[in-house]
Image (cartoon, rainbow, N blue to C red; front, top):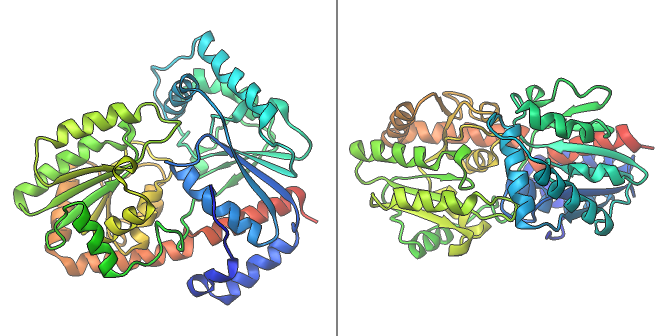
Length: 406
C-alpha cells in the first residue's frame, strides 16, 4: 500500500532548515506507535495522503502503520449515504437494518484491525464506531468531509461515537461540529506529496507519450477535471462548460479522469451517466484506472492541461486542485469547501458562481497564455508554502507531541 520514503529527499523542495525543524519535532515522539485506519487503499484523497504520509512518518522515527477496513458492498452503500448526509443531503435517513450493517462491520473489523497504538487516527465516518473497541492510547477522528451543514438526524446517530474520541481534526474551522464538547480540536489542511508518482517532475517526452497513447492532441487546448464520478463533483456540469467553451474555441479537448474506489458504490452509476453525456460530443476523453490510468498518467495529463477545472458542488478540500496548482496549471473552480483556500481569485486561478462564468474564464485563459502562466506560477508557490506533505507531517508531529509527547 505504500513505499519507503526518506525525509532527506525533500530537502531540494523545502530546504535544509525545514528538514531540521521536522527532525527536531520528531525527536520528541520518536518510537511512538501511530495507526491510521480508513476505508479504502486507493481511489480517493484519504488513501492518496496515507500512502505517502505513513512511510514519511516512519522515516522520521515514528512506528506508523496503515490499516484498511474489510467490508461488504452493503456496508459501503450505507457509508456512502452517511457521507452524503454529512455533506448536507437532508433527504437521507438510516433505517435500523442500515445501522445494524454499519455497526456489525465495525465490530468484525475490531477483531482483525491492529488498534494497539499510542495514537489511533480514524479517517472519516466509515470506521468511526471502532472507538467502541478502543485499546489504550489516544484516539483521534480525522474528518475530511465538509460538515458545515450536516443532516442532523444522521449526525446525531454518529455523534455518540465521535464524543468518545480525545480529539477531532477537520480541514476547516467551519467543518467542526458545534456540538462536539470536550474534545481537542485541530484544523489541518490536507496535502500532496511533491515526489510521488502523481506529482513528481516529468520530462516533456514522457507527457507526449501518454497523450499519444490516449489519442489526445498535444497541439490543441486541453481542459480537464480529475475527480471521482460522483454527483457532488458535477461531471455533467463540466461537460456543459466544455460545450460552451468549444463554441468559441473549437479545437478544445476535455479530459475527465476518475478512479473507482471500494467505498464508493455510486461511482459506476455516475461513470455511465458521464460517458453517456460525453458521447454526444467529440474531443471528450473519459478515463479511469480501469483504462490503465495510474498516478503517472494522471500526472502527465494534469501537466498537459491548459486549464484545470474543479466544479464540485461540495468539496471537503479538493486535492486535485492542489495537484494542478503544483504543476503550474491555473484552476477554474466553484467556491466550494476548501477550494477557496487554494484558488485565490485572480491570483492562482478563478472562482466562479455559474457554469457560464466558468466557460468565460476558461476561454480567457486559453486566449491569454501569458495570464495562464502567471497564475500557474503563483499557484505552485502557494502550494509550496501551504499544502505539501512535509507541512502535513509537521502538523501531525505537533499533534502527537500534544497528545503523547515526551
